[in-house]
Image 1 (cartoon, one colour):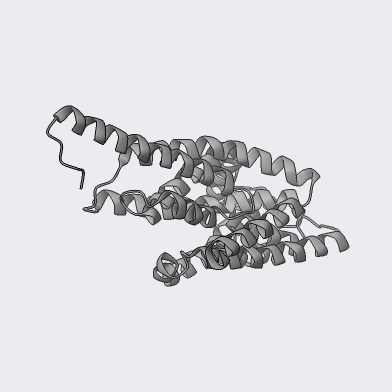
Image 2: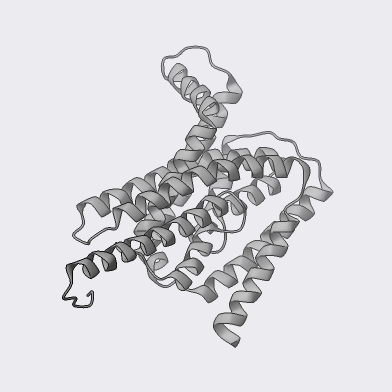
Length: 289
């Protein structure tokens, strides 16, 4: 409750200050989401850590996180609009029994199949992930576990020659890797890129598939939470939520371009070292200090 003022002018100043602080928090969280969703460092883990320092925005941090995920999913649609249009045409032509490019229809089907494991696991584990796993120390553990997966992927990548052959089986298997991302701190993009590398894809092809397969998952989760917000009874700071979403969308476009360019030339090791450093810092702050 706001303090009691005798001067209405002071009341207006109080509420403007409160709105400004909410918008600033939303901008920070939007920046965090936009950058970390497409870098293999875990957006959900960073949002949990950011909320520990900033506090929870009105309407619930999980709902706000989902709106940010919806904004970044729209960024993928915009960035890959040409690829997605080609894949949509392939599906429609296949349904119409018209000739199609086998590679396009295989990729489109693999993307659809890849979403199934995470959707099923998400529905079964949503309540647990919304409570128990939103803990900084568990995020730190997931950061370390994800780093171990990335090291394994880089080791295999160094010792084998990528084939860049996508199949329905690989789509399903990469979808299973995506389930790791349900645990905050693991990283959806990181788990799927590492999974693709372990299955014989190059870093760049694994990253491209990882970003494309995020579209149905992030759009679905974000749309569901948006409907929950609209139909709920809690007061929502819509100005702050909208500001955070716009920031996340704009920054995500830059992050996608950066990551695709980065993996064409470099390995995942810079992200591995960052994750290890962040995990040890979190453990020190929340467990040892």
